[in-house]
Image (cartoon, rainbow, N blue to C red; front, side, top):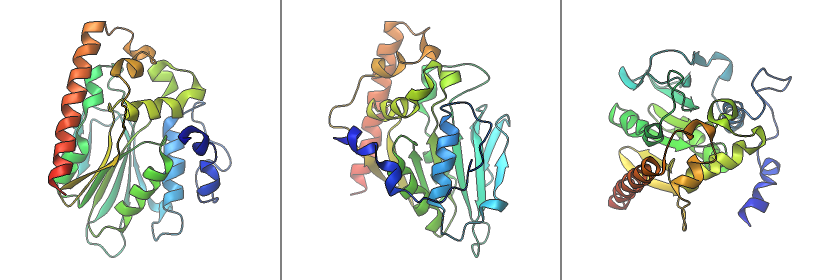
Length: 244
């Protein structure tokens, strides 16, 4: 039912196009391009001045949020938009295709950057993925509307770097979420909330084996990754339950 429903997702999103209306240079199936398109749609009609948004080039060594290092050694693209009327408050959106100096490792799936952003002073922090457009758009809007600074970390599947067919970008994003490798949640003023829970999570193996970048992981390493993902998700869910 969900897969059939998502076929019509575009019909429920804002029709205005603020990104790529005249084409762009991104690769076919680029997860970053899809995520940027959805973010711009989320900010459609708001007071956000997209034209004045600042982009940090992907090859910078760190992302700075509230004068604290959020990620060192990663290669994401960072969009920052100053909030009008809010002193030194910004919306930071990280478009993460999980590439680090050309190396790929299962440990990259276990990032906790939203927690770091929250601890650094962001009133709102969240994870999102363009495979779940309504969740992503709602979080970007909440991030923009909150009083202080906000941080949204978006997983952006990359067909070229990850090693999968371009038409499977959304499928890989959904599999990342469904395997709990990239859980969707938000942190509002320090309180955690799960925004998407899977009744029957997929295995880590189903996720990593669909990508050539993990071809070097043997069964033992995949089993260890599964154990770590399960452990991290249990800890995350426990934080969410404590907030109820």
